Length: 70
Ligand SMILES: [Zn+2]
Image 1 (cartoon, helix red, strand yellow):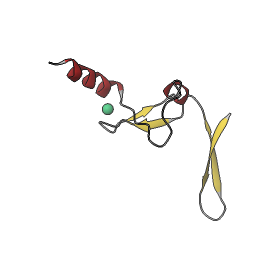
Image 2 (cartoon, protein in one colour):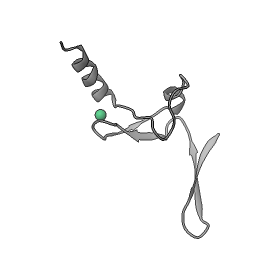
Image 3 (cartoon, rainbow, N blue to C red):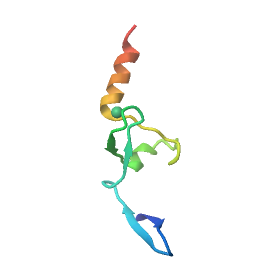
Image 4 (spheres, rainbow, N blue to C red):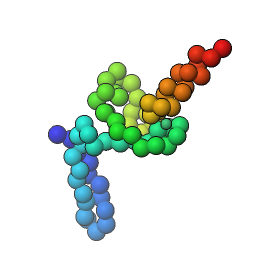
């Protein structure tokens, strides 16, 4: 099990378990919130938690479509 430790004020902190269904990010293109499977994102051993940027399925499809255009 993995969990976050987030300090609040006056020595109070919260802990939140990191599971496969409670990790989210914002799409780097449209900003929409989307769920993320961290194990899947980093399965290739590339990237890190601070700088990795992801696209939502809609923006990824749009990008692929534009890349195919001559
Ligand atoms: Zn998007």
